[in-house]
View 1 (tube, rainbow, N blue to C red):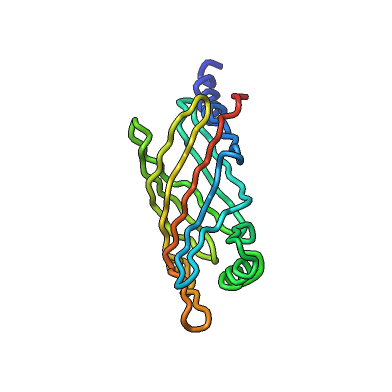
View 2 (spheres, rainbow, N blue to C red):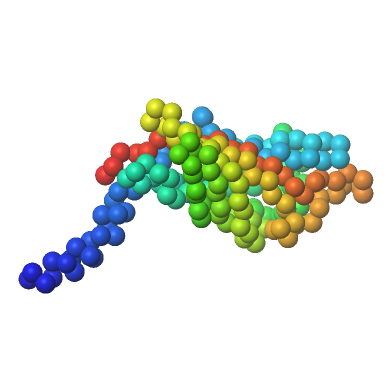
Length: 184
């Protein structure tokens, strides 16, 4: 019996570690994802109206996991015709995207660097960008900016009428505010 005790403890260790992680509940009223797009005559900022963000923090209150899933139909540019053209440029249908956190390295001041995989248009690529994580009362406030080149995901430069062109480099700005759920 005594020899089984270490084995049982070893088997229960993953359960104890998983139990220490808590979900981060996102406050959508204090969160956003904006995409800045430069175009020949009509630069604009699109807002991601809906998304699914799941994140966890560990027992030391560090963000451990994060995944953001979205539909491009929820990325609103302010003009319905432009929204439709974007979906067509992405190949039509109901295109989706997903970012999965790989590594998060932070200094004690909350400045840091993120790397992870961004998937859309059927392709996945590694992206890296700076972030800031602040603690405000019991909430986490995560802000950052990532610049991506859509050619990396196999998309051609968007052109219209032969003279209007959209820059393939777009800037994604985000702020997520979340509160850890109570430990179970």
